[in-house]
Amino acid sequence: MRPSAAERQESVLRAAVAEFATGGYHDTSTEVTAFFAHEALADTRAAVARPPAH
Image (cartoon, rainbow, N blue to C red; front, side):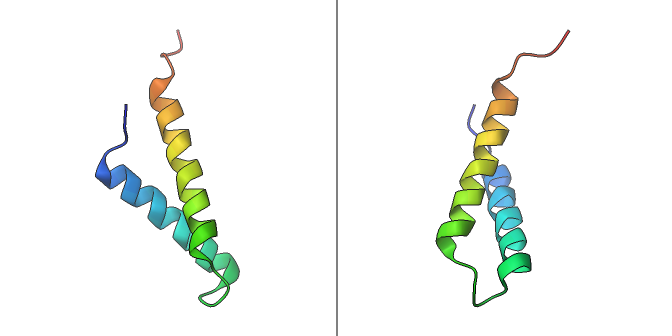
């Protein structure tokens, strides 16, 4: 199941905030932010795909 637009936006924003907190405005690359946003989305998809624990 694909994450909603709101979930994707949230993932990108969280990744960007984390990177800006670490590297600041001048040392934060869009490539690194995009990588972490992609990883966050992959985690979201995996959580949705898992069957419920019994």
